[in-house]
Length: 130
Image (cartoon, rainbow, N blue to C red; front, side):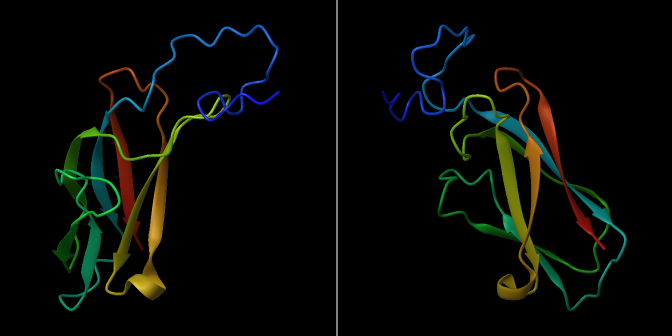
């Protein structure tokens, strides 16, 4: 017996307490920060997705920060909904991609867990520039 896409990963024919179940993914908020060890030069540019762009999802607009880089808050993102659907037994994760200068050779990603999707918690994503 298969559970279908909504209940995928939940064992069939078991009596489980699933707690609160939500259709879709609740929005969450996060701060995007920069932790700099290597400031690079004025010839370098950090590129990252603008998660506050009204159509956040597959077609993001990129934000660009010119070097040299400094540690600090880059952005505060409100009501973000772009992520994979939660899976039973696994903490939902958020991935934030970025690159310096060239996407092909320098693309990196940071991941942070979303431990309580139904709170007003402000999560933190930190890009480390070494």
